[in-house]
Image (cartoon, rainbow, N blue to C red; front, side):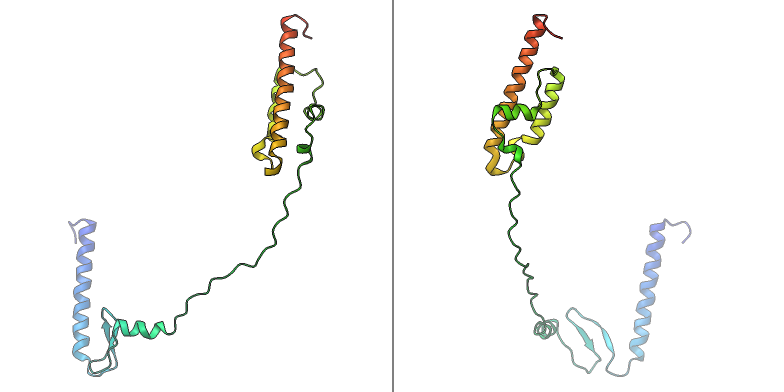
Length: 166
């Protein structure tokens, strides 16, 4: 085994073990006198002894099919339908005054503060996050909030251009 690669030495060892197993099997076959011992596995099923009964694979499968039962599917227990979540109260407030109150507009905000409030308001009121039946309210709230914030930003820019800013 010296002077061989690891792969070659493994192959040689496997070949030697196979030869030894063949010799052992030949010795046992010569010593085997009586039926009742398992000779080995065939393509179908194990044969028993030289004079014993042999069962083919299809015969064995047929014998076991009688014992085989299809598993019954487990049916889940019926769950009561979950109650729809209560409508968020803020989505029911659609008057411009109520939306301005929700935005907490006081007229003294800066542009950056107004933009931050728009993002915060959108996180809570965006129609994609609203329940199906309140999406129209959420859309209206977003439109009014955007209009109020845009008008406030325009007013701030006009005041700044006229030199009236604080």
